[in-house]
Length: 192
Image (cartoon, rainbow, N blue to C red; front, side, top):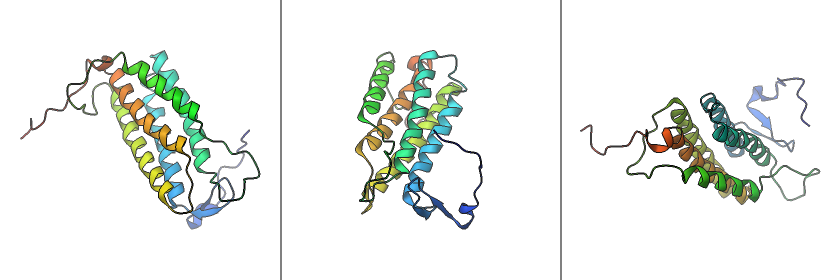
């Protein structure tokens, strides 16, 4: 259980922060950038959910995703640095990726086929989900970058989860555009 009874600590005033392991790092550390982008993704999904609350199926999926993203942030904030951690760290599991794939496939099977690229537009829910998708792609890029740094570790399920999530958010944006019927399609060269 997490207990937060004091919100500010002043430890960040000097541009440093602590990972959940207690390790002190710069606020611009690639690991902090990665879990910060995950947090931004979660906030964007929360905003999108203002527009999906009447869709019980999609809103339940997004609520589960928001919880998973906290798990994912906790995973990134507790890196393995050789010696085992003195507690069992919360990790993203392949089962969470598998569930996301199943939900993605279930939604996608009900969509109209695509005939062009989709502009990030349409209903308010769709536009908000497109924003969440682009922020999720950034979270994925920063996490992949982190994984390439010597001495840093990122589990494969974390990267797979972010990759599938951006796909799910794309499909969800189309779902909110009358299952693809109201998508706003790109018209190449139409504004020349």
